[in-house]
Image (cartoon, rainbow, N blue to C red; front, side):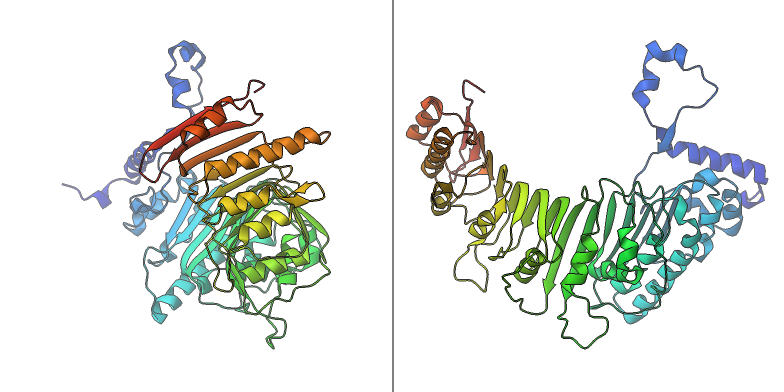
Length: 494
C-alpha cells in the first residue's frame, strides 16, 4: 500500500479541498432551503459560504491542522489562497513554518490572531514569546492594508508590538485592533525598539475600525506619532476605544518617558464624537490637586464613556482637564469622589459601587455623581448598597425649586436591597408634583425595579394600582425570603 506522502499532488489537493468544504457553512441557509426559491437558485455561481467555526484557537482548525503535519502538505496548501483568510499563531510554538501564510493569502482580506496557549511566566518563556511575536508582526506589516482584524493576545505586555506599527498607514478594511497582555510587566513608556516610526501630517484612514483595544502603556505609545498626526486620523463612525491597566506617574518624575494625564486626555480627545471610550484599571501614582479652573481641553463629545475599576484620583483629573458630553456614561466597581466640572450625559449607569472607600468615612459616590450630572434623562443603578431611603430622600430635596432628581425621566434599579417601596413612592410623588407645577416640567415617566429588592406590602400595592399617577411602574423582584413580587402599573395615558 502506498504511503500518503507518495500520493500525487493533484489527489492531495482534492482531499484538502474536501476538508476545506467541510469547514464551511452557508451564509444564509434558510434562503437556500426555501423550495419556493428553487427556480431562482439555478445560478452558475455557488452559494455564499463562510467558515463554520469561529474558534480561531482550536488546534483542529483548518488549514492549520493540516499545515503543521509536514513541509509537503504546507506546500500543497499554499497554492490555495482561499484557505488562508484566517491566519492564526499560537506563540507557544515556533511560528516560522507558517509565517509565509501572509503571502499565500494573495490579495484576500485576512484576519490575524497571535495568542499564547501557555502560561509560562519564566524569563526564558518571556524572551521566547517576545521574539516570536516580533517575527509575526514583522511579516504582517506589508499586509496590514488587507486586514479585517489584528489581535495579539499574549502572556506578557512587553511582548506586544507597538500600535504605531499598525496605525501609521491606511487600513481600509480593519475593524478590530486588539493588543492585550495578561501580565503587565512594563510600568512606564519605554523605547523598546518597536516604536521608531516617523510620519508626516498625512491623513490616515480606518473607515471601518470598530474596536481599538490596548493597555494604557500601548496607547501612550501613540504619542510617537504626534498630536498633529492624530488630528488627521479618519476612524470608523462607531469606534469603541478600550484602554486598560495603566498607572500614571507625576510629571515630577525624572524619567523622560513620563506621560501625564494631560497627554492621555489630548489623545482620546482627538476621537470621533461618535466614538465610545472604555477605561479599566486606570490610576495615578500621586495624589491629585483639586483646581478651581477646569476644562483645559474645552468641551469634548463622545458617544459613551465607561469607567471600570478606575481610581478616585483619575476621575478627579479626568473631569478637571475637560468638560465631557456623552450620550451614555457608566461607572462600574469604583468609588466616585467629589470632582469639579460637570458631566453632560443623557443616560447614567452606576454599577457595583463599593459600599465604602478606604479613604472616606461615608460612601457618597451616588451623591457625588448625581450632583455633577447634567443633560439627564435615564438613571440606572445596579448592586449599589448606598441606594437606600436616605439617598432617595436626598433626590427629592433641593433649594430654589431645584430638585436633585429633577429632569430624570426613567429610573431603573436592579439588585438593590437597602431601600423601601415607601421611600420610592414619596420620590415619585415629589417629582411628578414638581413637573405639574412647573410649566413644561419633566415628569418621571417610568420606574423599573428588578432582581433582588424590597417586597411590596398591601399599602404599596394599592398605591401603585390606584393612585392615578403618571409614572409607569414595573416591579419584578425576589424578596429577602425568596418570594417573587411582580407588579405592572401603566397609567391610562400610557
